[in-house]
Length: 112
Length: 412
Image: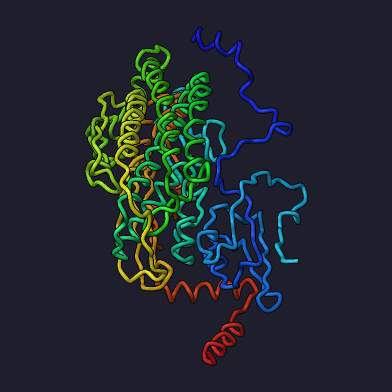
Protein backbone atom coordinates (compact mmCIF):
# COMPACT_ATOMS: atom_id res chain seq x y z
CA UNK A 1 0.00 0.00 0.00
CA UNK A 2 2.69 2.49 1.06
CA UNK A 3 4.79 1.54 -1.95
CA UNK A 4 1.80 2.26 -4.18
CA UNK A 5 1.30 5.70 -2.61
CA UNK A 6 4.96 6.71 -2.84
CA UNK A 7 5.21 5.41 -6.38
CA UNK A 8 2.15 7.37 -7.45
CA UNK A 9 3.58 10.68 -6.24
CA UNK A 10 6.30 10.62 -8.90
CA UNK A 11 4.20 9.11 -11.67
CA UNK A 12 2.69 11.30 -14.33
CA UNK A 13 -1.14 11.37 -14.41
CA UNK A 14 -2.81 8.29 -15.88
CA UNK A 15 -5.24 10.38 -17.90
CA UNK A 16 -4.35 11.64 -21.37
CA UNK A 17 -4.47 15.34 -22.26
CA UNK A 18 -7.17 14.30 -24.70
CA UNK A 19 -7.85 16.86 -27.42
CA UNK A 20 -4.15 17.75 -27.61
CA UNK A 21 -2.91 14.18 -27.31
CA UNK A 22 -4.86 11.74 -29.46
CA UNK A 23 -5.76 8.24 -28.36
CA UNK A 24 -3.49 5.49 -29.50
CA UNK A 25 -5.63 2.79 -31.09
CA UNK A 26 -4.17 -0.56 -32.10
CA UNK A 27 -3.73 -1.45 -35.78
CA UNK A 28 -6.78 -2.86 -37.49
CA UNK A 29 -9.09 -1.37 -34.88
CA UNK A 30 -12.65 -1.42 -36.14
CA UNK A 31 -13.63 2.23 -36.45
CA UNK A 32 -15.45 4.26 -39.06
CA UNK A 33 -15.97 2.50 -42.38
CA UNK A 34 -14.32 3.53 -45.63
CA UNK A 35 -15.80 2.79 -49.03
CA UNK A 36 -13.98 2.70 -52.34
CA UNK A 37 -16.60 3.33 -55.06
CA UNK A 38 -14.24 2.29 -57.88
CA UNK A 39 -14.00 -1.25 -56.55
CA UNK A 40 -17.71 -1.78 -55.87
CA UNK A 41 -19.58 -4.13 -58.22
CA UNK A 42 -22.98 -3.63 -56.63
CA UNK A 43 -23.54 -7.18 -55.37
CA UNK A 44 -25.07 -5.73 -52.17
CA UNK A 45 -23.76 -8.59 -49.99
CA UNK A 46 -22.76 -5.99 -47.40
CA UNK A 47 -26.34 -4.75 -47.25
CA UNK A 48 -27.60 -8.30 -46.84
CA UNK A 49 -25.21 -9.18 -44.04
CA UNK A 50 -25.31 -5.95 -42.05
CA UNK A 51 -27.00 -6.78 -38.71
CA UNK A 52 -28.42 -3.28 -38.29
CA UNK A 53 -29.09 -2.17 -41.84
CA UNK A 54 -26.59 0.65 -41.54
CA UNK A 55 -25.27 0.41 -45.09
CA UNK A 56 -27.11 1.09 -48.34
CA UNK A 57 -25.59 0.76 -51.80
CA UNK A 58 -27.25 2.78 -54.56
CA UNK A 59 -26.66 2.39 -58.25
CA UNK A 60 -25.98 5.76 -59.82
CA UNK A 61 -25.01 4.79 -63.32
CA UNK A 62 -23.60 1.82 -65.21
CA UNK A 63 -20.87 0.44 -62.90
CA UNK A 64 -21.10 3.45 -60.63
CA UNK A 65 -22.20 3.03 -57.04
CA UNK A 66 -22.50 5.13 -53.93
CA UNK A 67 -22.63 3.96 -50.33
CA UNK A 68 -24.75 5.52 -47.62
CA UNK A 69 -23.47 4.61 -44.19
CA UNK A 70 -25.54 5.51 -41.17
CA UNK A 71 -22.96 5.79 -38.38
CA UNK A 72 -25.67 6.04 -35.75
CA UNK A 73 -26.81 2.52 -36.65
CA UNK A 74 -23.40 0.97 -37.35
CA UNK A 75 -22.18 -1.33 -34.59
CA UNK A 76 -18.60 -1.51 -35.93
CA UNK A 77 -18.56 -5.29 -36.28
CA UNK A 78 -17.00 -4.95 -39.76
CA UNK A 79 -18.96 -7.92 -41.11
CA UNK A 80 -19.46 -5.94 -44.36
CA UNK A 81 -15.68 -5.75 -44.73
CA UNK A 82 -15.52 -9.55 -44.51
CA UNK A 83 -18.52 -10.03 -46.79
CA UNK A 84 -17.29 -7.77 -49.60
CA UNK A 85 -15.82 -9.92 -52.39
CA UNK A 86 -13.95 -6.98 -53.98
CA UNK A 87 -12.56 -5.37 -50.81
CA UNK A 88 -14.43 -2.15 -51.52
CA UNK A 89 -15.03 -1.63 -47.82
CA UNK A 90 -12.43 -1.10 -45.14
CA UNK A 91 -12.55 -0.37 -41.41
CA UNK A 92 -10.40 2.61 -40.53
CA UNK A 93 -9.02 3.29 -37.08
CA UNK A 94 -11.06 6.47 -36.79
CA UNK A 95 -12.95 6.36 -33.50
CA UNK A 96 -13.74 10.03 -32.95
CA UNK A 97 -17.27 9.91 -34.24
CA UNK A 98 -19.22 12.09 -31.81
CA UNK A 99 -21.31 14.71 -33.59
CA UNK A 100 -23.58 17.46 -32.37
CA UNK A 101 -25.63 17.31 -35.55
CA UNK A 102 -27.47 14.04 -36.11
CA UNK A 103 -27.42 14.51 -39.89
CA UNK A 104 -23.64 14.44 -39.93
CA UNK A 105 -23.76 10.80 -38.86
CA UNK A 106 -25.08 9.84 -42.28
CA UNK A 107 -22.06 9.57 -44.51
CA UNK A 108 -22.15 9.29 -48.30
CA UNK A 109 -19.26 7.87 -50.29
CA UNK A 110 -19.42 8.63 -53.97
CA UNK A 111 -16.96 8.52 -56.85
CA UNK A 112 -16.28 11.96 -58.22
CA UNK B 1 -42.04 0.92 12.39
CA UNK B 2 -42.94 -1.89 14.76
CA UNK B 3 -40.63 -4.83 14.72
CA UNK B 4 -43.46 -7.32 14.77
CA UNK B 5 -45.10 -5.99 11.63
CA UNK B 6 -44.16 -7.40 8.27
CA UNK B 7 -44.04 -4.95 5.41
CA UNK B 8 -42.96 -4.97 1.81
CA UNK B 9 -40.58 -2.59 0.15
CA UNK B 10 -39.65 -2.43 -3.52
CA UNK B 11 -35.95 -2.80 -4.29
CA UNK B 12 -35.44 -1.62 -7.84
CA UNK B 13 -35.96 -1.57 -10.83
CA UNK B 14 -34.10 1.71 -10.42
CA UNK B 15 -31.96 1.41 -7.34
CA UNK B 16 -28.52 2.84 -6.53
CA UNK B 17 -27.25 -0.55 -5.33
CA UNK B 18 -28.15 -2.34 -8.55
CA UNK B 19 -26.06 -1.83 -11.63
CA UNK B 20 -28.86 -3.04 -13.87
CA UNK B 21 -32.60 -2.56 -13.60
CA UNK B 22 -34.43 -5.44 -11.97
CA UNK B 23 -37.36 -5.48 -9.64
CA UNK B 24 -37.24 -7.15 -6.23
CA UNK B 25 -40.02 -6.98 -3.72
CA UNK B 26 -38.63 -7.54 -0.23
CA UNK B 27 -40.78 -8.60 2.71
CA UNK B 28 -39.20 -7.19 5.83
CA UNK B 29 -39.69 -7.60 9.55
CA UNK B 30 -37.61 -4.85 11.05
CA UNK B 31 -34.26 -5.19 9.33
CA UNK B 32 -34.73 -8.88 8.64
CA UNK B 33 -35.68 -10.18 5.21
CA UNK B 34 -38.58 -12.60 5.43
CA UNK B 35 -38.80 -13.29 1.73
CA UNK B 36 -37.84 -11.91 -1.64
CA UNK B 37 -40.00 -11.82 -4.70
CA UNK B 38 -38.02 -11.52 -7.90
CA UNK B 39 -39.94 -10.00 -10.79
CA UNK B 40 -38.08 -10.63 -14.01
CA UNK B 41 -38.98 -8.85 -17.19
CA UNK B 42 -38.26 -5.17 -16.67
CA UNK B 43 -35.48 -5.17 -19.20
CA UNK B 44 -36.87 -7.75 -21.61
CA UNK B 45 -35.55 -7.09 -25.11
CA UNK B 46 -37.01 -9.92 -27.17
CA UNK B 47 -33.67 -11.07 -28.56
CA UNK B 48 -34.77 -14.69 -29.08
CA UNK B 49 -37.62 -13.57 -31.31
CA UNK B 50 -35.48 -11.00 -33.08
CA UNK B 51 -32.95 -13.74 -33.87
CA UNK B 52 -35.63 -15.66 -35.77
CA UNK B 53 -36.03 -12.76 -38.17
CA UNK B 54 -32.39 -12.32 -39.04
CA UNK B 55 -29.95 -14.46 -40.98
CA UNK B 56 -27.38 -16.58 -39.17
CA UNK B 57 -24.61 -14.08 -39.91
CA UNK B 58 -26.64 -11.19 -38.52
CA UNK B 59 -27.60 -13.30 -35.52
CA UNK B 60 -23.97 -13.67 -34.46
CA UNK B 61 -23.80 -9.94 -33.77
CA UNK B 62 -27.26 -9.81 -32.27
CA UNK B 63 -26.54 -12.66 -29.88
CA UNK B 64 -23.16 -11.22 -29.04
CA UNK B 65 -25.10 -8.31 -27.61
CA UNK B 66 -27.14 -10.47 -25.22
CA UNK B 67 -24.49 -9.60 -22.67
CA UNK B 68 -21.88 -6.87 -22.84
CA UNK B 69 -19.40 -8.74 -20.68
CA UNK B 70 -19.79 -12.37 -21.74
CA UNK B 71 -20.33 -11.41 -25.37
CA UNK B 72 -17.84 -13.98 -26.68
CA UNK B 73 -19.53 -16.62 -24.52
CA UNK B 74 -22.96 -16.13 -26.05
CA UNK B 75 -21.67 -15.80 -29.60
CA UNK B 76 -19.52 -18.95 -29.31
CA UNK B 77 -22.32 -20.91 -27.70
CA UNK B 78 -24.71 -20.00 -30.52
CA UNK B 79 -22.13 -20.70 -33.21
CA UNK B 80 -21.25 -24.09 -31.73
CA UNK B 81 -24.89 -25.09 -32.06
CA UNK B 82 -25.10 -23.85 -35.66
CA UNK B 83 -21.84 -25.60 -36.56
CA UNK B 84 -23.17 -28.83 -35.12
CA UNK B 85 -26.32 -28.60 -37.25
CA UNK B 86 -24.33 -27.77 -40.37
CA UNK B 87 -21.75 -30.50 -39.64
CA UNK B 88 -18.83 -28.13 -39.97
CA UNK B 89 -15.37 -29.19 -38.85
CA UNK B 90 -13.79 -26.10 -37.37
CA UNK B 91 -10.01 -25.82 -37.86
CA UNK B 92 -7.91 -26.37 -34.76
CA UNK B 93 -6.29 -22.97 -34.89
CA UNK B 94 -9.74 -21.34 -34.79
CA UNK B 95 -10.68 -23.41 -31.73
CA UNK B 96 -7.50 -22.32 -29.97
CA UNK B 97 -8.11 -18.67 -30.77
CA UNK B 98 -11.67 -18.99 -29.46
CA UNK B 99 -10.34 -20.47 -26.25
CA UNK B 100 -7.83 -17.63 -25.94
CA UNK B 101 -10.47 -14.92 -26.32
CA UNK B 102 -12.78 -16.82 -23.96
CA UNK B 103 -10.15 -16.88 -21.23
CA UNK B 104 -9.18 -13.22 -21.74
CA UNK B 105 -12.86 -12.44 -21.42
CA UNK B 106 -13.05 -14.44 -18.20
CA UNK B 107 -10.11 -12.46 -16.81
CA UNK B 108 -11.82 -9.20 -17.73
CA UNK B 109 -15.15 -10.33 -16.26
CA UNK B 110 -13.70 -11.58 -12.97
CA UNK B 111 -11.60 -8.43 -12.48
CA UNK B 112 -14.69 -6.37 -13.16
CA UNK B 113 -16.65 -8.41 -10.64
CA UNK B 114 -13.94 -8.01 -8.00
CA UNK B 115 -14.21 -4.24 -8.40
CA UNK B 116 -18.00 -4.25 -8.21
CA UNK B 117 -17.96 -6.49 -5.13
CA UNK B 118 -15.45 -4.16 -3.49
CA UNK B 119 -17.68 -1.21 -4.31
CA UNK B 120 -20.77 -2.89 -2.86
CA UNK B 121 -19.09 -3.43 0.49
CA UNK B 122 -17.67 0.10 0.53
CA UNK B 123 -14.12 -0.99 -0.29
CA UNK B 124 -13.65 1.39 -3.21
CA UNK B 125 -9.87 1.11 -3.24
CA UNK B 126 -10.29 -2.43 -4.52
CA UNK B 127 -12.59 -1.12 -7.25
CA UNK B 128 -9.99 1.40 -8.41
CA UNK B 129 -7.17 -1.17 -8.30
CA UNK B 130 -8.94 -3.98 -10.12
CA UNK B 131 -10.51 -1.76 -12.76
CA UNK B 132 -7.13 -0.21 -13.49
CA UNK B 133 -5.71 -3.68 -14.08
CA UNK B 134 -8.72 -4.60 -16.15
CA UNK B 135 -7.61 -1.97 -18.66
CA UNK B 136 -4.57 -4.14 -19.43
CA UNK B 137 -6.74 -7.04 -20.57
CA UNK B 138 -9.17 -4.72 -22.37
CA UNK B 139 -6.29 -3.31 -24.41
CA UNK B 140 -5.18 -6.83 -25.31
CA UNK B 141 -8.70 -7.71 -26.42
CA UNK B 142 -8.83 -4.55 -28.55
CA UNK B 143 -5.48 -5.48 -30.05
CA UNK B 144 -6.47 -9.06 -30.89
CA UNK B 145 -10.05 -8.54 -32.02
CA UNK B 146 -10.41 -4.90 -33.02
CA UNK B 147 -13.08 -4.07 -30.45
CA UNK B 148 -12.92 -3.47 -26.72
CA UNK B 149 -16.29 -5.07 -26.02
CA UNK B 150 -18.49 -7.18 -28.29
CA UNK B 151 -15.39 -8.47 -29.98
CA UNK B 152 -16.90 -9.79 -33.21
CA UNK B 153 -14.20 -12.46 -33.33
CA UNK B 154 -16.41 -15.41 -34.19
CA UNK B 155 -17.95 -16.47 -37.41
CA UNK B 156 -19.72 -19.67 -38.38
CA UNK B 157 -16.93 -22.12 -39.18
CA UNK B 158 -14.10 -20.42 -37.34
CA UNK B 159 -12.79 -17.04 -36.30
CA UNK B 160 -12.42 -13.83 -38.26
CA UNK B 161 -8.93 -12.76 -37.30
CA UNK B 162 -5.61 -14.48 -37.02
CA UNK B 163 -2.98 -13.88 -34.39
CA UNK B 164 0.59 -12.98 -35.32
CA UNK B 165 3.74 -13.64 -33.25
CA UNK B 166 4.01 -10.02 -32.17
CA UNK B 167 0.51 -10.11 -30.71
CA UNK B 168 1.41 -13.33 -28.90
CA UNK B 169 4.40 -11.57 -27.31
CA UNK B 170 2.26 -8.61 -26.22
CA UNK B 171 -0.41 -10.92 -24.78
CA UNK B 172 2.19 -12.89 -22.83
CA UNK B 173 3.64 -9.65 -21.47
CA UNK B 174 0.17 -8.50 -20.36
CA UNK B 175 -0.50 -11.88 -18.73
CA UNK B 176 2.72 -11.54 -16.73
CA UNK B 177 1.61 -8.14 -15.41
CA UNK B 178 -1.87 -9.44 -14.62
CA UNK B 179 -0.55 -12.52 -12.86
CA UNK B 180 1.60 -10.36 -10.61
CA UNK B 181 -1.44 -8.23 -9.76
CA UNK B 182 -3.69 -11.25 -9.23
CA UNK B 183 -1.24 -12.69 -6.68
CA UNK B 184 -1.74 -9.46 -4.79
CA UNK B 185 -5.53 -9.83 -5.01
CA UNK B 186 -5.33 -13.37 -3.69
CA UNK B 187 -3.38 -11.96 -0.78
CA UNK B 188 -6.02 -9.26 -0.29
CA UNK B 189 -8.90 -11.74 -0.49
CA UNK B 190 -7.37 -14.24 1.92
CA UNK B 191 -5.72 -11.90 4.43
CA UNK B 192 -7.52 -8.54 4.43
CA UNK B 193 -9.70 -8.45 7.57
CA UNK B 194 -12.25 -6.03 6.08
CA UNK B 195 -13.08 -8.46 3.30
CA UNK B 196 -13.08 -11.60 5.44
CA UNK B 197 -15.29 -10.10 8.15
CA UNK B 198 -17.73 -8.47 5.76
CA UNK B 199 -18.18 -11.42 3.43
CA UNK B 200 -17.97 -14.47 5.69
CA UNK B 201 -21.30 -16.04 6.51
CA UNK B 202 -23.17 -13.78 4.10
CA UNK B 203 -25.38 -15.32 1.45
CA UNK B 204 -24.89 -18.93 2.49
CA UNK B 205 -25.87 -21.74 0.11
CA UNK B 206 -24.95 -25.20 1.30
CA UNK B 207 -23.72 -27.96 -1.02
CA UNK B 208 -27.14 -29.65 -1.05
CA UNK B 209 -28.98 -26.40 -1.65
CA UNK B 210 -26.64 -25.46 -4.49
CA UNK B 211 -27.47 -28.76 -6.16
CA UNK B 212 -31.19 -28.46 -5.41
CA UNK B 213 -31.41 -24.90 -6.71
CA UNK B 214 -29.31 -25.69 -9.78
CA UNK B 215 -26.67 -23.08 -9.11
CA UNK B 216 -24.02 -22.79 -11.81
CA UNK B 217 -20.57 -21.32 -12.26
CA UNK B 218 -18.59 -19.76 -9.40
CA UNK B 219 -21.73 -19.69 -7.22
CA UNK B 220 -21.95 -23.48 -7.34
CA UNK B 221 -18.19 -24.01 -7.15
CA UNK B 222 -17.99 -21.86 -4.01
CA UNK B 223 -20.40 -24.33 -2.40
CA UNK B 224 -18.14 -27.22 -3.23
CA UNK B 225 -20.00 -28.39 -6.35
CA UNK B 226 -17.34 -29.39 -8.84
CA UNK B 227 -19.19 -28.33 -11.95
CA UNK B 228 -17.44 -26.72 -14.88
CA UNK B 229 -18.44 -27.28 -18.51
CA UNK B 230 -14.84 -26.70 -19.60
CA UNK B 231 -13.89 -29.88 -17.76
CA UNK B 232 -17.16 -31.86 -17.81
CA UNK B 233 -18.07 -31.44 -21.48
CA UNK B 234 -15.03 -29.86 -23.16
CA UNK B 235 -15.70 -27.58 -26.11
CA UNK B 236 -13.27 -25.53 -28.24
CA UNK B 237 -9.72 -26.52 -27.25
CA UNK B 238 -10.31 -27.26 -23.58
CA UNK B 239 -9.98 -31.00 -24.06
CA UNK B 240 -6.27 -30.57 -24.88
CA UNK B 241 -5.50 -28.16 -22.07
CA UNK B 242 -4.80 -28.99 -18.46
CA UNK B 243 -6.30 -26.83 -15.76
CA UNK B 244 -7.90 -27.26 -12.37
CA UNK B 245 -11.52 -26.67 -11.47
CA UNK B 246 -11.40 -24.36 -8.48
CA UNK B 247 -13.82 -25.14 -5.69
CA UNK B 248 -14.23 -23.79 -2.19
CA UNK B 249 -16.15 -24.95 0.84
CA UNK B 250 -16.98 -21.60 2.44
CA UNK B 251 -20.41 -21.64 0.73
CA UNK B 252 -20.77 -17.86 1.18
CA UNK B 253 -19.87 -14.64 -0.63
CA UNK B 254 -16.33 -14.92 0.68
CA UNK B 255 -16.02 -18.33 -0.95
CA UNK B 256 -17.26 -16.90 -4.25
CA UNK B 257 -14.60 -14.18 -4.07
CA UNK B 258 -11.88 -16.75 -3.45
CA UNK B 259 -13.10 -18.96 -6.30
CA UNK B 260 -13.12 -16.09 -8.77
CA UNK B 261 -9.71 -14.77 -7.78
CA UNK B 262 -8.17 -18.24 -7.98
CA UNK B 263 -9.87 -18.87 -11.31
CA UNK B 264 -7.95 -15.90 -12.67
CA UNK B 265 -4.72 -17.84 -12.08
CA UNK B 266 -6.17 -20.84 -13.95
CA UNK B 267 -7.10 -18.55 -16.82
CA UNK B 268 -3.51 -17.31 -17.11
CA UNK B 269 -2.38 -20.93 -17.14
CA UNK B 270 -4.81 -21.69 -19.99
CA UNK B 271 -3.82 -18.57 -21.97
CA UNK B 272 -0.12 -19.52 -21.74
CA UNK B 273 -0.82 -23.09 -22.88
CA UNK B 274 -2.96 -21.88 -25.78
CA UNK B 275 -0.32 -19.42 -26.98
CA UNK B 276 2.43 -22.02 -26.64
CA UNK B 277 0.59 -24.79 -28.49
CA UNK B 278 -1.18 -22.64 -31.09
CA UNK B 279 -1.42 -24.99 -34.10
CA UNK B 280 -0.74 -23.78 -37.63
CA UNK B 281 -3.38 -23.85 -40.31
CA UNK B 282 -6.45 -22.05 -41.58
CA UNK B 283 -8.63 -20.06 -39.19
CA UNK B 284 -12.02 -20.76 -40.74
CA UNK B 285 -13.89 -23.08 -43.05
CA UNK B 286 -16.43 -21.78 -45.51
CA UNK B 287 -19.91 -21.99 -44.05
CA UNK B 288 -23.06 -22.24 -46.14
CA UNK B 289 -25.58 -19.41 -45.91
CA UNK B 290 -28.44 -21.90 -45.73
CA UNK B 291 -28.11 -24.11 -42.69
CA UNK B 292 -29.73 -27.56 -43.17
CA UNK B 293 -32.71 -28.48 -41.03
CA UNK B 294 -31.89 -29.82 -37.60
CA UNK B 295 -31.53 -28.87 -33.99
CA UNK B 296 -28.70 -28.64 -31.53
CA UNK B 297 -28.04 -27.75 -27.93
CA UNK B 298 -24.76 -26.19 -26.99
CA UNK B 299 -23.20 -25.59 -23.59
CA UNK B 300 -20.48 -23.13 -22.68
CA UNK B 301 -18.85 -22.12 -19.42
CA UNK B 302 -19.30 -18.36 -19.39
CA UNK B 303 -17.53 -16.37 -16.65
CA UNK B 304 -20.80 -16.39 -14.70
CA UNK B 305 -21.60 -20.07 -15.20
CA UNK B 306 -23.08 -22.47 -17.65
CA UNK B 307 -24.63 -20.87 -20.70
CA UNK B 308 -27.04 -22.94 -22.80
CA UNK B 309 -28.17 -22.21 -26.32
CA UNK B 310 -30.67 -24.22 -28.32
CA UNK B 311 -30.96 -23.62 -32.05
CA UNK B 312 -33.49 -25.12 -34.42
CA UNK B 313 -32.84 -24.74 -38.12
CA UNK B 314 -35.38 -25.28 -40.87
CA UNK B 315 -33.18 -25.28 -43.94
CA UNK B 316 -33.39 -21.57 -44.68
CA UNK B 317 -30.87 -18.84 -43.89
CA UNK B 318 -32.76 -17.92 -40.72
CA UNK B 319 -33.13 -20.03 -37.58
CA UNK B 320 -36.60 -21.22 -36.65
CA UNK B 321 -36.00 -21.00 -32.92
CA UNK B 322 -33.21 -19.78 -30.70
CA UNK B 323 -33.41 -20.38 -26.98
CA UNK B 324 -30.94 -18.81 -24.60
CA UNK B 325 -30.49 -19.80 -20.97
CA UNK B 326 -28.09 -17.27 -19.50
CA UNK B 327 -26.23 -18.29 -16.30
CA UNK B 328 -27.94 -15.67 -14.14
CA UNK B 329 -31.33 -17.30 -14.72
CA UNK B 330 -29.98 -20.50 -13.16
CA UNK B 331 -28.51 -18.63 -10.19
CA UNK B 332 -31.39 -16.29 -9.45
CA UNK B 333 -33.30 -18.88 -7.43
CA UNK B 334 -30.27 -19.34 -5.23
CA UNK B 335 -30.34 -15.59 -4.46
CA UNK B 336 -33.83 -15.94 -3.04
CA UNK B 337 -32.56 -18.69 -0.76
CA UNK B 338 -29.43 -16.74 0.21
CA UNK B 339 -31.39 -13.68 1.31
CA UNK B 340 -33.93 -15.42 3.51
CA UNK B 341 -33.52 -14.47 7.19
CA UNK B 342 -30.62 -12.17 6.42
CA UNK B 343 -30.42 -8.44 6.95
CA UNK B 344 -31.37 -5.85 4.35
CA UNK B 345 -27.85 -4.39 4.35
CA UNK B 346 -26.52 -7.67 2.91
CA UNK B 347 -28.81 -7.52 -0.08
CA UNK B 348 -26.62 -5.55 -2.52
CA UNK B 349 -23.55 -7.70 -2.00
CA UNK B 350 -25.51 -10.98 -2.06
CA UNK B 351 -27.11 -10.03 -5.37
CA UNK B 352 -23.77 -8.81 -6.70
CA UNK B 353 -22.06 -12.03 -5.58
CA UNK B 354 -23.68 -14.15 -8.27
CA UNK B 355 -22.35 -11.58 -10.76
CA UNK B 356 -25.83 -10.99 -12.10
CA UNK B 357 -26.57 -9.97 -15.64
CA UNK B 358 -30.24 -9.14 -15.55
CA UNK B 359 -30.61 -8.11 -19.15
CA UNK B 360 -29.46 -11.60 -20.22
CA UNK B 361 -31.88 -13.18 -17.80
CA UNK B 362 -34.97 -11.13 -18.44
CA UNK B 363 -37.80 -12.84 -20.16
CA UNK B 364 -41.46 -12.27 -20.55
CA UNK B 365 -43.31 -13.23 -17.41
CA UNK B 366 -47.04 -13.45 -17.06
CA UNK B 367 -48.35 -13.38 -13.53
CA UNK B 368 -51.61 -15.08 -12.73
CA UNK B 369 -53.22 -15.67 -9.40
CA UNK B 370 -52.65 -19.19 -8.16
CA UNK B 371 -56.38 -19.78 -7.55
CA UNK B 372 -57.59 -18.11 -10.70
CA UNK B 373 -59.80 -20.33 -12.80
CA UNK B 374 -59.70 -18.40 -16.06
CA UNK B 375 -56.37 -19.91 -16.99
CA UNK B 376 -56.41 -21.15 -20.55
CA UNK B 377 -54.12 -22.01 -23.38
CA UNK B 378 -54.45 -20.05 -26.58
CA UNK B 379 -53.50 -21.68 -29.86
CA UNK B 380 -51.75 -19.74 -32.60
CA UNK B 381 -54.89 -19.25 -34.82
CA UNK B 382 -56.85 -18.14 -31.76
CA UNK B 383 -54.16 -15.64 -30.87
CA UNK B 384 -54.22 -14.38 -34.45
CA UNK B 385 -58.00 -13.94 -34.28
CA UNK B 386 -57.67 -12.22 -30.91
CA UNK B 387 -55.17 -9.76 -32.31
CA UNK B 388 -57.48 -8.92 -35.23
CA UNK B 389 -60.40 -8.33 -32.86
CA UNK B 390 -58.26 -6.23 -30.54
CA UNK B 391 -57.07 -4.00 -33.35
CA UNK B 392 -60.65 -3.60 -34.59
CA UNK B 393 -61.59 -2.32 -31.16
CA UNK B 394 -58.79 0.22 -31.44
CA UNK B 395 -60.25 1.34 -34.77
CA UNK B 396 -57.69 -0.36 -37.02
CA UNK B 397 -58.98 -2.78 -39.61
CA UNK B 398 -56.55 -5.03 -41.41
CA UNK B 399 -59.15 -6.93 -43.49
CA UNK B 400 -58.69 -4.78 -46.58
CA UNK B 401 -54.92 -4.87 -46.28
CA UNK B 402 -54.93 -8.65 -45.85
CA UNK B 403 -57.00 -9.08 -49.01
CA UNK B 404 -54.58 -6.92 -50.97
CA UNK B 405 -51.68 -8.92 -49.62
CA UNK B 406 -53.31 -12.24 -50.57
CA UNK B 407 -54.00 -10.99 -54.08
CA UNK B 408 -50.44 -9.86 -54.44
CA UNK B 409 -49.17 -13.23 -53.23
CA UNK B 410 -51.37 -15.00 -55.77
CA UNK B 411 -49.89 -12.93 -58.57
CA UNK B 412 -46.39 -13.89 -57.49
